[in-house]
Image 1 (cartoon, rainbow, N blue to C red):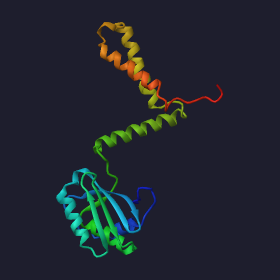
Image 2 (image 1 turned 180 degrees about the horizontal axis):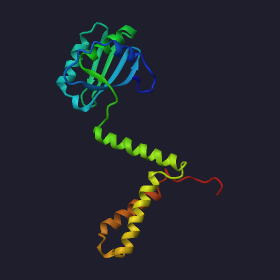
Image 3 (image 1 turned 30 degrees about the vertical axis):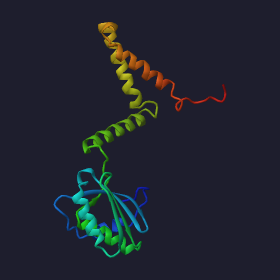
Image 4 (image 1 turned 135 degrees about the vertical axis):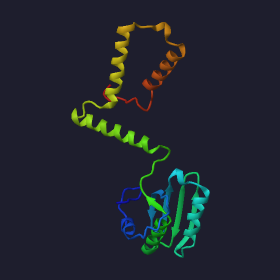
Length: 193
């Protein structure tokens, strides 16, 4: 079921079921960012943020009698539709959008679908590790531990090899560790001490 950006179910699902689906050959992926009485804000997926495409949608929406104003921002892919606020006008707006080939789904900003799939897989794997170990261990612990074990193995096999480490790598690690260890937002004051 579609929800607005706050996660509340809306009447949009009913409109989607009744739509005629006279869509274009390539659907336009869109996400409903907010839906308040009299105002609907959409975000068009990056591949469809062409001025000509967004202008076509805007012109057709402006031709509707219940729509008061349509504003677009091509850079962010935002379309703001102000309508008279009646339930029937929202249904008409959504039906018009569906007829234009607009599909409503979660769209990613800046990441490819493959990147989002990998991200979800890692998050799910992390949750499984946490559940299997009753919250004792997760990937944020296991990954650095694995790298540390590889480092120890390399030391045992090849020795320290300090002569081949470039100065800028050591300087970066010194700076980075100092910043992370002395981050004021991460330091917690202990009231007992």
